[in-house]
Image 1 (cartoon, rainbow, N blue to C red):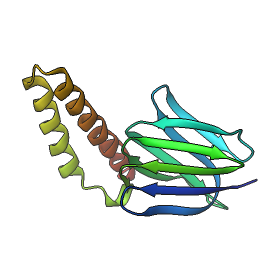
Image 2: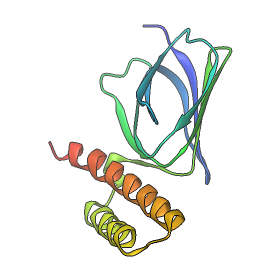
Image 3: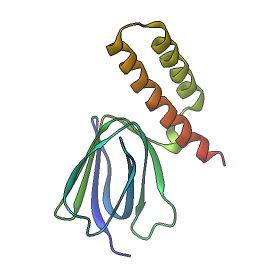
Image 4: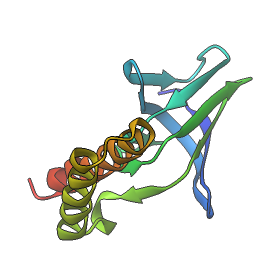
Length: 137
């Protein structure tokens, strides 16, 4: 299968750099897939599950990501997100507590800006829970 270079960065450090066969990113419109030869584009990434299959990989590497963006330029894909975690690195109990706190914040505030912030926190916590739960199956 044809591959493409993937450069995947968080705000803190490079997360992955290498050849990939496919990539699926969470967008405001849903999951969006990339394969070798994709046309150039810039795309917003929302909190959710990002997965990629490395060259000669059997399974997808699943990660929970915070918002960011993806750029496809001349066959190279660059992903820039605030944060990313591999499934095995996610603490399920901590993610559940973060979800519950964000939900309470959203329900308690009347401020529209604070509600949106709490919704974003909830979305990230849900993404972490979803990715971590899949590891237990």
